[in-house]
Image 1: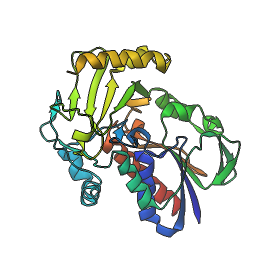
Image 2 (image 1 turned 90 degrees about the vertical axis):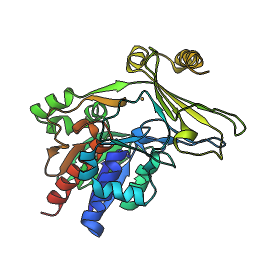
Image 3 (image 1 turned 60 degrees about the vertical axis):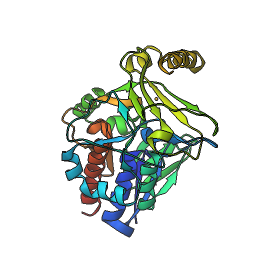
Image 4 (image 1 turned 135 degrees about the vertical axis):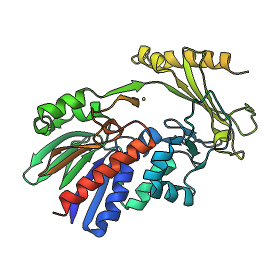
Length: 327
């Protein structure tokens, strides 16, 4: 049985695992590693004991008519399974395209990733920080943070490009000069996210579920989680995203210095690699580093930074994996 490792348990990695399972069924053993304690990547939902869980990355999905048609089977699957639903809460300050529809996940955006991982029947292992990939004949030997390693027939790397470029081993030599130049052009924005959770008997009655803030140099976005997902049985939660400029200016600052600044601005307003800024030129969907043994790179850095961008990369990766592993 072919052994395929997908590094990164975010949207691209989880959907790639799901699609690969459907394409090759029981002919492949799929393993997904992630360095974090939970799955989701930039679609992670943080749970709280007595309050509504908070989406600390992507807040909702905005789908144009073009991508709703192109990815119709996936949208239909997620809607019919109740994984996400049309967004019904008011949004302030949103500049929306005329043909776009917005969706939220009642159980949190991380549930989308969990759905695809469950469908993939992949072996998911967390707290596995990949540090080195080495070519061993027809296999890849992949080392992780504990100094241990495993061998795979094919490896797909979907983590942010800067983390890919930091890997030790044979990957730097396998990248062509052109590939290295393309990857070096990828840029990400950085911002801080703050989650404020309230007890069940607290009241947070704001006239919106989301708000894009235009009059603050610090705060860019507010999400009232219980109103966004139409939940009232738990205490409310508020998610605050800072502006990119504030994130860049305080990127190296200790969190205990940044948090009071955000809180102070939040009081005025109320009565993590974030997004890809510059993708790989040409938006190819994926990059093939080596054909034997197979090494692919994917993620929204190879398309565009939203739900459909991750879908496009996962589809591109799956087509390449299916073609290479079955011939």
